[in-house]
Image (tube, rainbow, N blue to C red; front, top):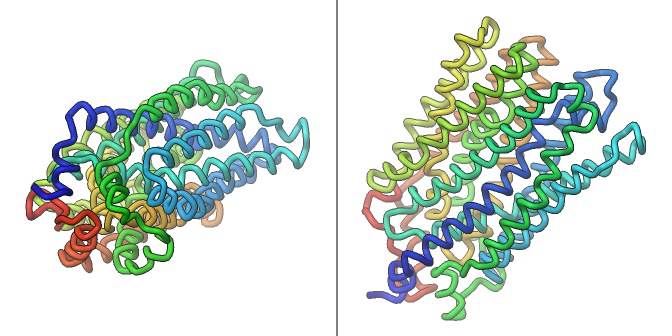
Amino acid sequence: MTSFQHSSTTVSAIRRRRAFIGATVGHLIEWYDYGIYGFLAVFIGNAFFDASNPVTSLLSSFAVFALSFFIRPLGGIFFGPLGDKIGRKKTLLIVLILMAGSTFTLGLLPTQAAVGMAAPILLILVRCIQGFSAGGEIGTITSFIAEYAGPGRRGYSTSWLMVTAVLGLVLGGLVANGMIFILGTETMAAGGWRIPFLVAGPLGLIAMYIRLKLEDSPEFQALQAAGETSKAPLREVFQWKRAMGIVFFVITLHSSLFYLVLTYASTFMAKSLGFDSGTTLLYVFLASVLSAVVMPFGGMFTDKYGRRNFLLVIGLAATAALYWFFAAASAATPQGFIYPLLAVAVLFGLYASSTYAMMSELLPTRIRSTGIAIAYNIPVAVFGGSAPLIATWLIARTGDISSPWYFFVGTGIASLIALVVLRKSDFDRSHAASAPAVGATVPTGNAKHSV
């Protein structure tokens, strides 16, 4: 047995399970923290910006939402190399503390009525800290789970990161929309919007305790033992421009689908389509849960039959479904709109099931956390976090509620082009570069695993 295989495949089932549960529980809570803002954007806009113009306050709230995403690449640049130098576990703990602390603080912020222009400035600062920590989470936790996964199980294992991200947002959505439904908009506007943010405090403490018990990934421990961790991962990662470019464009569709289904759809149905809060809550819940349910199956499928062709077919179908979603909006009824929404949700779940595994396989162990952090966070900022802002702006600009399809279909086309140019040699290069770091060949299970 090679040295790498020993470190990867002989890890006890208990240790592997503990690492998996510990990482995903923290990820779940972080996404709850990050997601509740999107569901409460209307109330936050009125509390921190000029409430006399509803469109302006909503656009301002979404602008702050988008701004936090543009901070994410900076978090990736800082924490990604940290994960490759000091380890995945320590980095995951730091970003969790930042996320939970900043979310809790947001629930305590004074409003514009109390402190004037200082209120939106404080809001922007807190959201930037959230974005900074979220940018550091993704590269580190994807590397951690991928490196703990057994041979031929990276698709299935990393798909659960997407499942927990979705469930974290579902939890945030249930809390936020549930409170709106039960308490009413007046009570929420009067300060009820703070409660979901304050819940982040105790949840964060629970997640921190769990992450303190984790051990670092076997691949990273093997690198440390051999003295072969990267001394300058931020410089070294740019030797992998092609791989990072492919990740960037594959993630464009992933990002726009994620934030359409999990955050913007709620506002779109309530504000543009005029659906009541009960219908909106039910539809977003169904779409989110359905997308999460199909993710592990997509991951298992690509572990066995390959990722590229699967993602190419699903990406094409998802692009068509995005057009259907917005084209159906002009004459939408609650009875009819459920179909394009669920179609987008299922295709989002299948597409996102294997993008994390693909990222981890395109980049070698030494700079994996750094490479993912940069190549993932930039398209998430440009095509994901800005999606609600761009969609709201397009509707306001054109007066046409179907106009956001231009943006969303464009993200699909960008990803399809990247998948067309992806080659088996892209994965082979990463595997070959990983092998010397631990004195062995990195196992990938089935030969069809990557492509």
